[in-house]
Length: 420
Image (cartoon, rainbow, N blue to C red; front, side, top):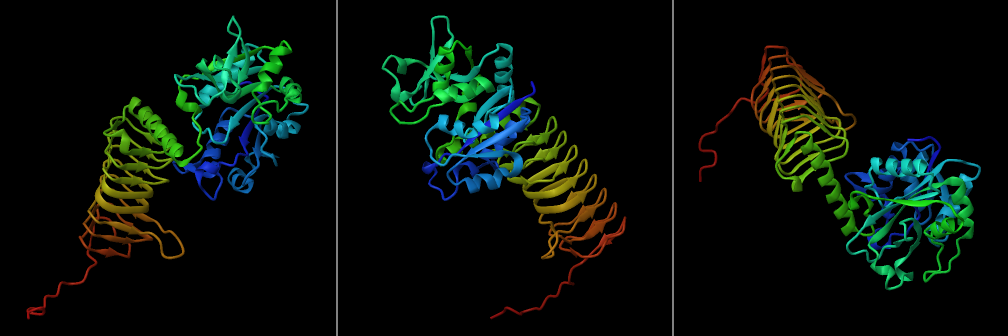
């Protein structure tokens, strides 16, 4: 990616259709806010500067973005052109390219934006649009081209003629502009349209009329440009991301039995020939080795690293836990803040009691340990290699290597105690 890239993120809309007390931009897909995903993208493409245009409920948006961007305030919501005008002071005196993204369009791939910027630079275009082909383009601005295919303008749906509405190439709203050309063009935008708004789309015709080169790149996957306006669309985009992530893992050699009910968040690493059973959730940052078996109904949370040939079975929850090669946690267990060695068997119903009411404490389990069913490991505690824990024990003290630990009351039977 070339240097001198500034990204403007449009994040000022009201989002009233979300029917929420908070900004739609701070709603989450897989535990990450919509606007955070867009800021992440801006950073990933190597932006030298990020400007967020905020307005309605801006305190919610700014609380999420923090100091990762500079802020331009749009006090009146008078269109995308007006929003960009608020960011213009940050662009003054700068050279290079400016990318326009939207806080409610969170699934654009880094590779797509890089291609867009590189095309704009290579073809020396003052404006490069990201467009898409829709069978039913209703609601979108249409791309106007001349007889040789050059982009000459964009017409919004409400301002389009009957013939123009038949055009299937639509505007995604994502652009790469030459900074100096954009600053000159936005001075000429007028609210001469049905909405009385300042359309950023008008910049394309303004540039074309000035003899500047304007082009477009058609997105390969239309799901990348989907936006979120309500909670139905939020669920739809979550579904799209789920399938994208799961498909990527399957291409890399992971077996997912039912992608529709397997929830693998961003940034998870899974080795070859690992099998993921249905109703499994794996959070961001988890690392899983080769030949593992996960689920069904497993929940692997943040901070987990699983070695090779590990089994995590049904109704098991792991959190900040490292599991060594060949270890098994077959079912109905919670292992949190834990280091588990190689070749360990964790019996059904075992839990680590890792929270003392103030602090989280650690449990360390050595290699080749056998932990009987219904065991409570009260942290901080350490089990030595080859130790054996009797079923039903509550372990509060360290267990030396090669030892048997029994921590339960002796059984007492009172005959006829419940006899009528």
